[in-house]
Each structure stands twice: as structure tokens, then as C-alpha cells.
Length: 184
Image (cartoon, rainbow, N blue to C red; front, side, top):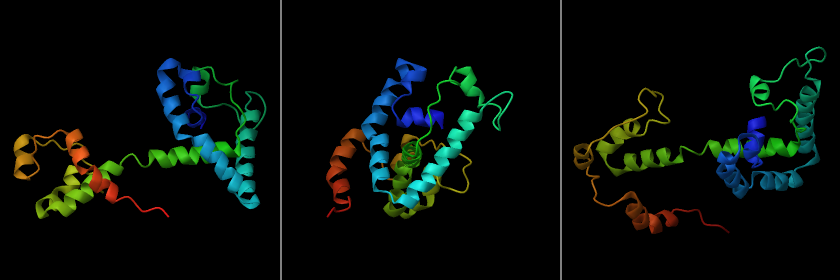
């Protein structure tokens, strides 16, 4: 959770240096902590009590880490490897909410495969039969996660184009925007 907090707070570079700055900028741009704070402000007192109780448990563990006394004997090894054992800030309920947002974001990374699979299923009978082989991310049979197609396979499927992916994206942008849910 320490690593996740560093990510969603945009503070990873404090541990790993300047190479982590792009991740920090990305996380701060997404605003995990800002959104978590807004969510906290809208929560009911009962919901807040649950998050506060969880935070109390985490903080109890952190404060009771001791080689001689306390219920917690050691932190995970990475804390000692990176010299972080004395740099742990107390856990706050907003940290839990921001962590949920980070996890939710990470679960959306395969949306492109899911979208491609569904488009292939709708495109033609041949592609429908190959959809799971071409994009097996959610298949029950994750044996081969990489499918290699050569130009002849793509031509045979009727998908060959001299256009770049960027050109295809621009060409289909209006169609993609028309699929967005209407707000209001």
C-alpha cells in the first residue's frame, strides 16, 4: 500500500528519483487524491466510520512494528531494502479511497482488447470465430497471449490497409464520438 500511496499521491519520485517524475505528473493530473477528498466529503457518517476503522487498523500495525514488542514484528522487506521503515506516514481514509481509484484505473487497461474483440465478433463470421484467438485477454484459455499475423493473414481477413493506425483513428473519430453516452 505504501507503493500505491506513492503512486496515487504523485510522490513516487521521492523514493525512486527523477525517473519516476512522469508517473507522478500523470497521477497528479488524474487527481486521485483530489477525487478521493471530494468523495470523502460526500460520504455518510456510517461510511466514514468504516474507512476510519480500517485506517486505524493500518496505523495500529504501523505503530506496533517492533523487533521486541508488539503484534507486528517486521514490515515487508522492501521497506528495509529502500530504507523506508521510518518514513511511513499515518494512513488516512482518503488514502483508502484514492487506492480504490488507482485499482479501478488499473482494471481498465484491457478495454482496448475487449473493444477489439467485440468489433471482430460483429465484423464477420470468420472474425467472430477468431476473436478469442486474436484478443484472448478475457478467455478462459489464456494459453497464448500473443497472436502473430502476417500480411497474408490480414489480407485474407479483409483487414489489410495501407493507412497507419493514426490515420484510421482520425478517420473513425466521428464514429467513435457518436458512441459516447449522452450527458444530461
